[in-house]
Length: 98
Image (tube, rainbow, N blue to C red; front, side, top):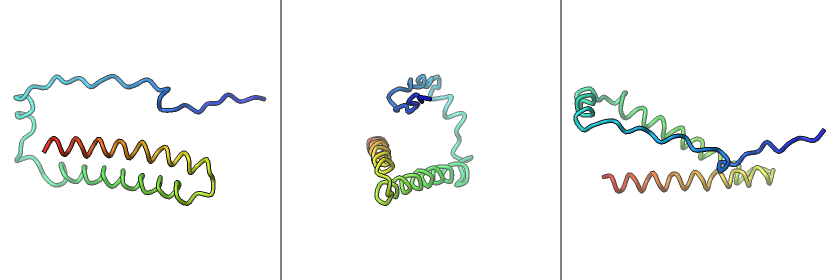
């Protein structure tokens, strides 16, 4: 029995629709109040997301550097390249927005 190649690259997947930006300056300032901001509802979720991304990056690095499987090393190398590109764009956006 022959199996079809079910591997799909990220280029084969249609992009998600763009976000809808229906907010106005007043709708944001009326909804987001500085006095409601706390560590647990602002900074903690950001720190948790950064930690999750860091853990994933660490695992990718381990696969790339230490796996005895050459195909897994190559897959991890591709993933690391994608991750590094995303991280570079994220840091560039942070630099220009501050």
